[in-house]
Length: 70
Length: 167
View 1: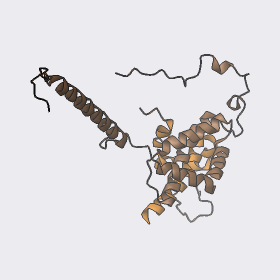
View 2: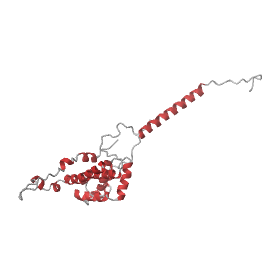
View 3: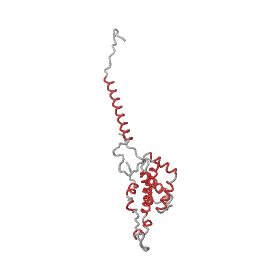
View 4: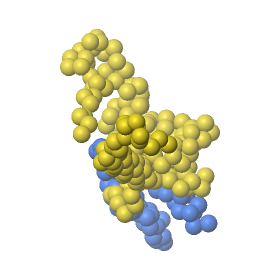
């Protein structure tokens, strides 16, 4: 019999596409044009540690994907 | 039928109260309080060659990655390195990192994320167990058949007379 493992639930709940959105930088010509939307300006990582884990995971997963593809 | 043996591995009631409060590592404040610190701690440990060698050995044995990750973080909690909350938060990263080590080493591993990976496949140990039981049953039947045939054979009365033929 297999016991309950919280690791499975924790891993499956990490939706990286949702937590780490792709950075879209729209270059606008003006000097005073906003570089980032206001939502991204606040440092959410400090508030939500899941985002820290997700960003680290994203890097590792990209690395894994390149290994598996080659 | 074999009766189930009671398990004596479980702790005795009140065993948790035998040590002074705060004497255990997990009862004192954790060494690493933030997720960032815990991530750094684990990534540093996982980058060691000894760790990855041992991990690959365990993965090759068929132990699911999720189980290894859970054991690893529980070990951290027991040693008082971090709290259980931080441990749970770090688990997905541990799994991802271990899968990266497995992939880069070219090891076929069980991620442990599938609901029941061996649903269709009967486990070898289970098949062996059934086979052993069957063999035992066949042996027992053969023994009883032999006994019956021995018992059924009528005993030949040996002639006892003076003129009886002797071999």
